[in-house]
Length: 240
Image (cartoon, rainbow, N blue to C red; front, top):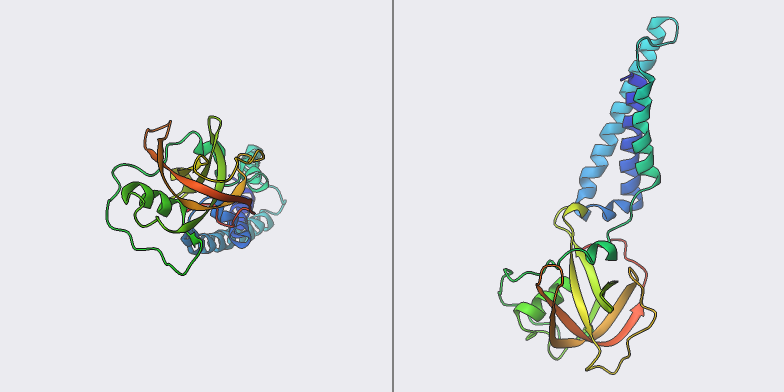
């Protein structure tokens, strides 16, 4: 491959990594701690691109005619996927993936004790994973008597809306959802007619002993007795 093509590709990849770090879009693909890996890697690639570009310019100057010889122009086609990646970067995983993946909360989870929730906070904000673990493995003992606040996006299990959030261990490639069902039967709220897939909402409610089964992997899905559902903007980091 021509040195100038190498320099351009390295510059685009390194610059793209730095752009993802600067805008925060890297959170659509990896955990927050990866910021401190992405930035040095991006800087290194840009530096190597600069060195390679200077060397390519010197080689052209030394050749005397300003033209390379015997170097396939098809090498420049390697720029196409790089440019495409920068221009059409995929969004964070959402309802499409969650509806086709089993819940991350499995029966093999630890049944260790859970700390009591604060009595002076109302409602108590919890992650979906924390709520699901307490509801299933602690049988809701630490949830009872508290109003709970959950934030996530809407997905549909058949005709039933659910609250979900993707959980990642390292990156989006290993993402799996945690799902929470809505218990309307014992609440005073009606099912909103305008809930759309991927819509981000804040749910306030209380623990419900009702449980269901995930249609994908058969694991338990806890429910929450809904008091209110409010639309909210998507957070900067959509994963947990």
